[in-house]
Length: 189
Image 1: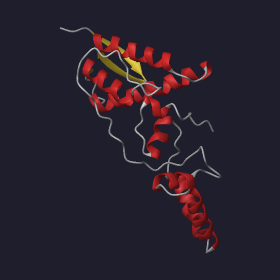
Image 2: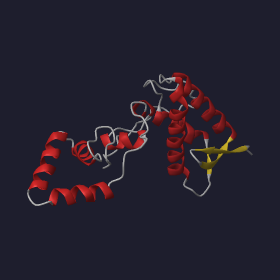
Image 3: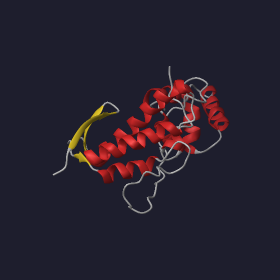
Image 4: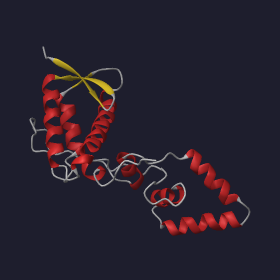
């Protein structure tokens, strides 16, 4: 019989085995120690990483409330890595090497390179073309009968904003690991 602990990560409640809870605590402590951001931003980064861990746990165990095991914590720690790109050397199990799958790109509006709403820069990153080409295309479509205006407005309404580091990674086709997410900041409107 194993002891379990209820924990809240990223606003979601999870039930973790006792050894999984301790391992997760060590991982988060190591992660925070290796952060190279200013002290004022560490809390925000840790909040983002906890949110990403909660997403991964929800994918693993679902929202049904099944217990998070040590193996699932190890898998998440291996997937996210450390902010400096190194591996977390606190492995308590020997599962062998893990592979990080590069996700497909997802379409978001890009708040970092936006001129108006980030539609053109988001499309450029999604399609992997120069943003200038997309902006010229939209301008030509606008001049040739206002179609560009309506296309832009529809995209502005329908495409979500990449407002978290994980979404910014997905926009660029990067795996949302800790190293990749540390490159981006949370968007504040």
